[in-house]
Length: 144
Image 1: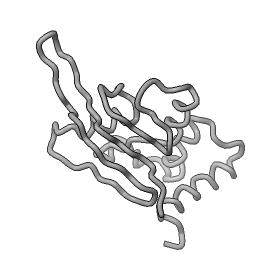
Image 2: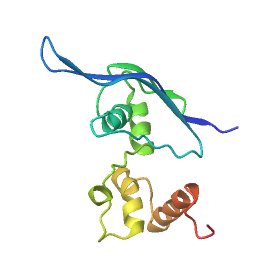
Image 3: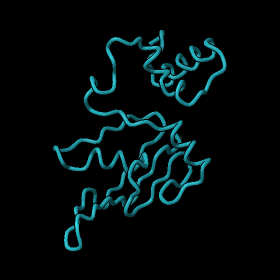
C-alpha cells in the first residue's frame, strides 16, 4: 500500500477586495496524492489552479481547509521546523517551461538548484549523487 504524500480537504482561498466584495478563487476543493502518483490539476484559465498550488505551498495563507503533507498538518500556523520541511520538500512547477527551465543550463544544475539554495550537500560528489537519486525516484534513471 502506498503512502499518502498530500491530502487536501475543503481548501478555500478567498481574497477580500473591499468591505462588500470577496473573490472566492478556490472554494472548497478536496484531493489527495499518494506516493508514486503523478497528479495533474487541469482547468480553464482563471479557475484557481495556480491559487491552489500557491495555497498548498503556503505562498498564500489558506482561508480554510486542511492540508497534510507527509503526515504533517501545514494548514495553519507552522513551526519553523515544519516550514523548513515544506520548503525543502515541496516545489511548484509552473505551466510555462521557459519560465522555470533555463535552456542554457545543464539538467544537473537545474535539478540541483533546490539543493544549492538550501545547502543540502557537503561535496560536489554528494550533490551529483542526490540529483541522480532524484532522477531515479521519478523514473528518469539510466535504466529506464
